Image: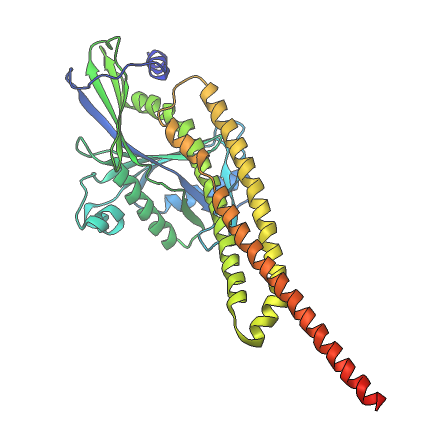
Length: 392
């Protein structure tokens, strides 16, 4: 039965239809993010999992901790922008397969403190107190699902992703920082996911995946028609399996974009330094322009050429990755979001920076030529004066 339902959901061609024709029951609300557990020191894959198990096991509100190492488990290196500043790219070791899952309880009395949405709105969000957290390690990187276990229907589970994120960060810091929770944004992804059931067989013209677009967060609903009861765990597994690979690629594209953006910001900062060299007045300013700015300008232009090559490589590589994902069985529900990440380019900004650096260097060269010519003229005049004195 599970395979039959899965096949139904993975078909691509559906005609959308209003969901209000049949009586429906909402079973589950979950949000999506990308949680990265960074381990300070460990020895091999077993050491990584053992450290995670020990640290999470010390958090009293975490229950039912399960670490699935999968078959042929191995570690891979994942590049991301370091939170410590511009130009800091770090390599984070992460599993290439497997999962980490647990239930975490966060009392209502402290939720407003940790939930950034509650802090911004000045009110409490009704999202329950029990949350199921599942991080799956897939080909392109981890994807995290946060389910509101004891929440009322219509819960905005995206808010729970933010709450769990900040609470986990705080608890891990209290333990000494051996394990650090890193996050790739947007976490939460800008959608709330829901699982619903309807009685009877599925009508022929009915799309079981419905997305209500919104200015803030979409509502994505998976609807199962069933004559017999199917366990919620199976329905969740099917729904989340549909979007797992898609979001794994999405967050890899986000990481790639952040690295290229960080590189752009670093070049922009260097250009500001070059501009400052050209704006400095007095003898000190002349010295900096004539003898130091040339090296800085060449450095900036070389960095820009490297960044332009990275842009071209990213476009080609990311387009190929999306093509391969589309060729797999199934449907992509957020293909437009994937394409947006691929289409993000910093070529225009890089060209503007290159033109600015080239213009400043051209001005410096002309100033240097004038200075040399003036110096030669002065030396010539001085030589003439000396020759005249000697002749007398």
